[in-house]
Length: 475
Ligand SMILES: [Zn+2]
Image (cartoon, rainbow, N blue to C red; front, side, top):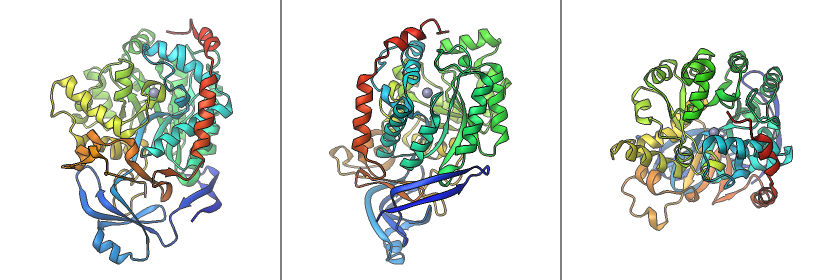
């Protein structure tokens, strides 16, 4: 059954947007019952369980025999494993065309010689294709919510793409007003005014699946006025978050310290960029006093282990953060530094990295990692009742197959998910009660067409001129 209708949506801040649900296969009117092994959260698993969905919410969770009997008239689907959808706590959908473009380079070279020139070179149409490619990969591998760091220009196209594909997300246009390539550097007031326009247009759009984060690139590329302006903007609108990179690299923290006389987290705290509405990606290089600030202010941290390993940034002190009560989410970062947006691979990397760094095999066990990738991510994103399969919570649900040789035997579901499963195992993706992928086929867009256009644009990218223009801008 497919539906074609447009919905008018009033957002949490009163913003109004037109959300188009084109060709989206939604939950049938009589509702749906999903059966399989149900992973409710990081502590509870129901063997031979079921989840009943009604509209955008979960109506019931329990044992299959009872619920199938009670909800006999619902459309029924069966998957080996049913889980809450993953939350990508730090993603760059619009960098997807840079996959494989800048391997084996140092972070600031990677950023200034490759990634920023690539972002600057994207036309609006190309950026839309990049964003769609990113969201497609996320939906295919089980990420149902992303905290998405866009680019400076053409942000509308990414918001529209996220709305069209049906993913849940906290998206933000990037702010850069100093030490940036000419093509990306913006006047501070104009950049903040554009952010405000986007908040009015998209915060709460598409049935409130899409919300806004004010998104400075990082302290190096943003003036004090810009960072303070970001805080002011977030305070003006209910539910708007702040999302930025922080203390990823030693060169970055040295630059900030030389500019401001403060360690990076202290500087961000000074200008208002800490708190329960702030999500900081990475936080690899923090000292004791900075960690105290993160804990005291309730700031969220997103750990991106593959990116930190690939760019040799270092190892974030995740166990220490968790012990201090800091909420740590998990993210893939962007395709140029990962090069996959698969949340299951990322969970494996996260656990293995902590174990080898601490020479301690008990570090970050599978359940802890699973919680980071689901519930902790939902807390960072700021969506209530998200990240667990509980009655009355949002119907963001994924279904996995477990008929692969590497899935047998399955002594422990969490061990399987963190250490053996792959994104390809995901067969079913539901966001807000809408079925985006079923039996491994994404049904909200023409996935082949997106991949074809992305491949065409990716292959004709010639970054030589942009790279040359960017030289000399690097801090
Ligand atoms: Zn990033």
